[in-house]
Length: 330
Ligand code: NAD
Ligand code: TYD
Image 1 (cartoon, rainbow, N blue to C red):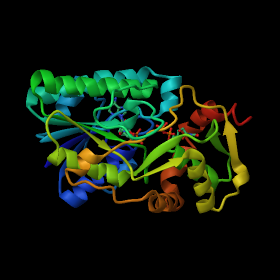
Image 2 (cartoon, rainbow, N blue to C red; image 1 turned 60 degrees about the vertical axis):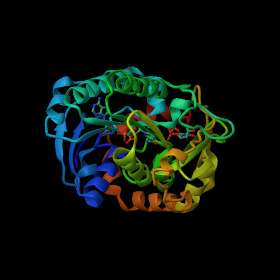
Image 3 (tube, protein in one colour; image 1 turned 90 degrees about the vertical axis):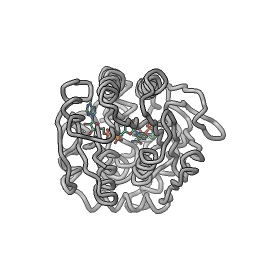
């Protein structure tokens, strides 16, 4: 297949491109705006055609889709909840206007469309797991705008009969994840003996999914998913944040005294949990348990300083000071 991967220079997008090119022999066009999270080096070892542009720019969308693609997979997004609380503007633009522009262009050309979405559109759940029929109840500007995009995608199936599929993943972790997110932030801080800022009581629970499992799930939905369908892609293990952080302390050989409880995130969702029976019925299964994926991820960060050193010494510093400086008394 020839695929257009929007947001392919980011964490999950680049892992998806690598798997599609290497394991499936696909031809890939990437459309990416290269925000702070989009990094060309994430794709330096994979053959692809690159179009630099924003998904909300109709000319960029037309140029990328004009390269004769069979399907569009949209990963492009602003993805960090804390940033959506501080500055929601880009989240609204990219998720609503951007998704709309891609849908219009794909509809005009009759191209199959896969939207990459998140479990966060369902909100928080104390017990049990969300199914694809659970109501949408997003609670942050990030998840609310992602839910808006999902509804727009569904409307293009319902109204225009467009071939759309939505994949909702749980929390991903693995190589190439920008260190604003819990796991890479804690790994890099622990490797530098910096403090580990745990929000609130640290008992919030996330459903951890190794990035290659999500990438394979999206590929599965692309190839076998029904038009207009939604597929949850959840990880095999749930874990409270504090336990994740303690395991990272152990794996990096750091000292537990660097763990520091800081003010909780406003509107913090307590627990996410996804039921994935529907995509399992299509033949997908998560292959990597958290107990294997976490040490593998720690090793990747330890061995790939070339990747994170420029990030930690660049704009990320200013972000880190804004987000954590006061809480950590710096
Ligand atoms: P990321 O932040 O690492 O990468 C996002 C990519 O999108 C970057 O390359 C960035 O440059 C690009 N981008 C942002 N705005 C753009 C725009 N307007 N036009 C073109 N490109 C733009 O994100 P990620 O963690 O790889 O997430 C990818 C997708 O998966 C997102 O849609 C996200 O909502 C979803 N998702 C993420 C997780 C997770 O745990 N990270 C879980 C479930 C779903
Ligand atoms: P995050 O990686 O931001 O993903 P999401 O908010 O999309 O689930 O955060 C994962 C969990 O870790 C979440 O409960 C917030 C918590 N967290 C911390 O306790 N400290 C931190 O510095 C970060 C970034 C997250």
